[in-house]
Image (cartoon, rainbow, N blue to C red; front, side, top):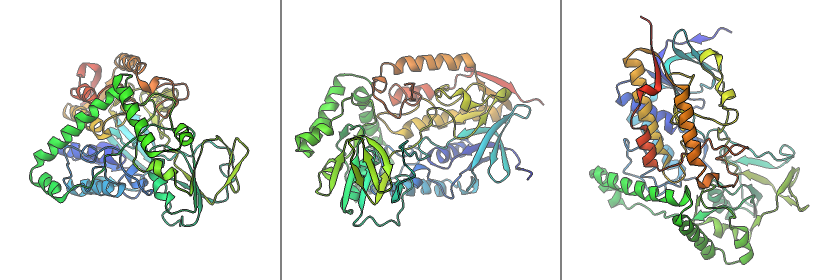
Length: 492
């Protein structure tokens, strides 16, 4: 079947989550209206559309986990749940008139740069090709649910539910439920399930550092103040930002604040878990910050309910009726909840991306992703990444980093369109020098201190995190150094 080729747009955005919609808003505010958003699902929202499990919420305060250029004075709590965050995302679409730019059920299968025309061609399943002068990868790092590599995964005859693909029709009442995983989604799911099921077994591979969650209902007077005096909300956001910046000294590098943070977490554990043996099972043996720090007030109490049990023996395999651990016990259950997170793209790409001279980004990133300032890759002109390599935050809001990326991309895209450039391509040596510097800095961080985490590739390469303060990242992205790029004008 012949492919249907659309007329070229100025900008093509892949994904209609926080990143894609934020990119669209900033383009419109810069006067660039000729863009299209391709979304593989049938509605916006990204990870907040997909993660609707019980208890789903953000572990960054809502006034910081939102765009500074689109504040929401009506957050109901300090840490809002997924429904409210998704509502905010839908508000962005309506408030900024983005609906006409979004094409739903458009699953991109390949992205190819046409050197002759200076266009990116997005092949969409179903036979359509979308063309654009510039392309933005905004599909997000938390978009593909990951099941663990466990023997017998397909042999279990009961119900299997992944945290990112929740089945709201399944009735947990009176069921024997197992939860595999003890990460960020698990600490939210376990307290919600513990009061509904007959029995709950939580399978822990590695204990995590858990700190208290200062979550409070926002008073109506506070919401009215934010609505009438926007500067008051801006001041709160700024205070939250700098409070989180100080946390970098505890979780990114090994400092006296690291020990203070560990004491806080251990005090939280002691206060909530009275049994010595359980406390020992829940005490991490790695430095805080090496893995993601969890935030919860009700996870530890849920584990101590009469119908709950923490299992620390390694899983050997799944069986038709349950989970077999390495001590030879088969734990029978009716349902297994996989709180096992996402396939975070530390290497490879979600679909083939082909640049100059037929080079393929997935092959170049096979041993670990690299980019320049996390946003551009040499040999792939006019292509921009959000949440690209080494832009992950360990202590502050992801949207703070995201805003810097969006504004950087808008400036570069403005250059491509305004100067009629065929190609804007970062230089190979500039990118290599940048990444040598990043990896040198990462070697001194807690993330690279020896534990195994989703931040690292199998051989220990950190393609995920940014080794510094969010304010440092903002300064890095504040200006585009045009000398770092090859700028090739379009003919004619």
